Image (cartoon, rainbow, N blue to C red; front, side, top):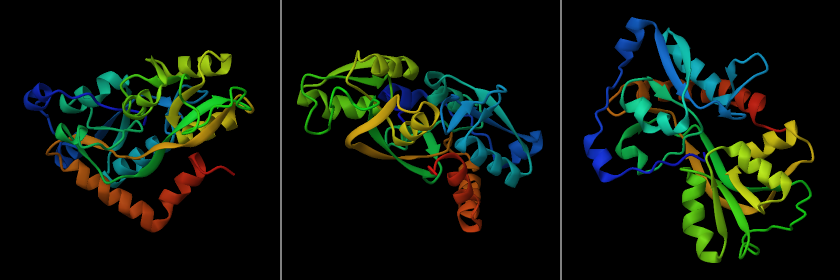
Length: 253
């Protein structure tokens, strides 16, 4: 996502991972998934209040292959990565979490399960005529705090003269885009597609991609659940069920 992790050396040294094992999960009969359900179409609350989405269905497949039920715990991203994972509060985390070398110092990742990109979200019709990389100097660009989008924007956009505005709440950034208070908001490509579907005409994508990134399932370091998740992912890609989920949640008809 979107989602970045600011890890200090002290945190790396002091984190104690309580790594749930496959045997422990099977014994208790439940796989506990931590997710921040604010990132459609990957995880979000449906009209009935249940958490659903692309990530959720993959997690259900992992639980099914283990022979256990999936329990979903809604956790704010700041608490999810890495504390909820390393403390053992959850067995795994999925929330559009980008695989980075920094994060891999404190958690274990599955193989990549989705390739995304950081893009610019603008008002429908792009009345401000925002473009990248041609048109960023002097523009106010929104980012979600503590995300890979913010990290990339700090590295790439600020030196080119952009003013960055950080939001704890992605929806607040979207509101400012819609109101014309900022020129663009950095977000994930699938988010733009979902916004276009749910809110026709209100938002669009502008300019070239800012950066590409891979999402991974997250586990405590030392847990054999990561290998189990990789087996499920390989099975799904082989039997067509992975593509079926892409078609269900992400591929635009």
